[in-house]
Image (tube, rainbow, N blue to C red; front, side, top):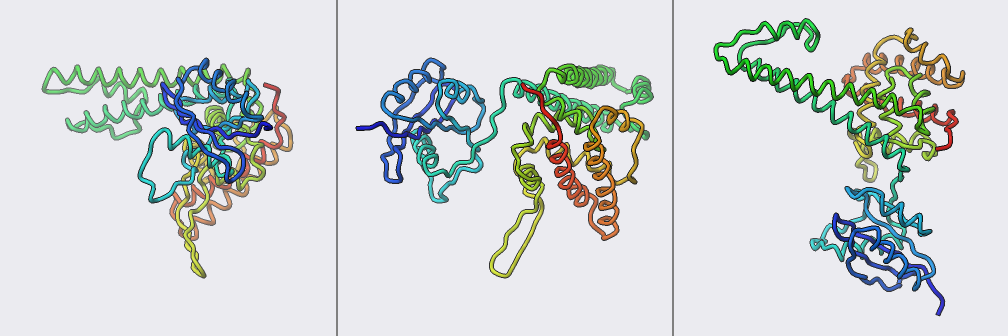
Length: 369
């Protein structure tokens, strides 16, 4: 009997992996293989055993905290392996039983039917850069939290700084505060130290991002995106690290949908209802675009800093960046005149900005990684 294709579903956990196989064909048998240890040796043994019984193996497992190590190992062994998006797996509303065995069998069945949506798998260098960018984002959240705790402490005791905070003048104002209880001075100094430590960590990680950029294969895309207004080095590096290879999107609408910047819709018959944006996909990249979109509320112009960033870029990229400025600044003013909320207008600008990001990425020649 000839060897056939087998679709292998893996329900991956920290210590174990539940395995199920679906034979080729809609009526092919689906059976649970069992559980193996989540170690490279056990995964290799599994692949070797199954390869001896079947002609072709097609693995799949859900994206999760265990990363892409299994996918890379199976790919290096010559097998097809997809990492699928958990949020896009079809689910029956009445299904109330969940076990590892059932999950593995379900993955194998849906993989055979072509109902699973794979995610883009970065190489190890790209994943390392993304980890660095996410560490910087965690540091930014720590700075915000430390500042909020300090401000809340001061407000509880009747101290409020009336001018822009977190400047040298603000620091001098903090050192001159008076409290009735001596313990409050200890709390104040501890809160100030927490803010300074978090700020130093954020600045240190930003410097590391800039230092690591020249060795990254997607560095040309990061440099090119800085031609756009509102996008500097950290924002550009975050966008590229989170989105990966932008050329995998065949058109800008796909990128907009991936970022969750398209309107939600609930239509039936002759009734069409559109709501707020879907907020699907990568939230960090979406947030970066929305922050950049706020800069288009001002008239279109090329600042000195922007000119310096564009000096070594191709004319096609500079033209796209200027076209983005002209269109988005004009659209921002028009929508505001129409009475739209500023947040709604800014989100609309972020959606269009994603299209210009896609256009610039198509113009960049990425160096071999």
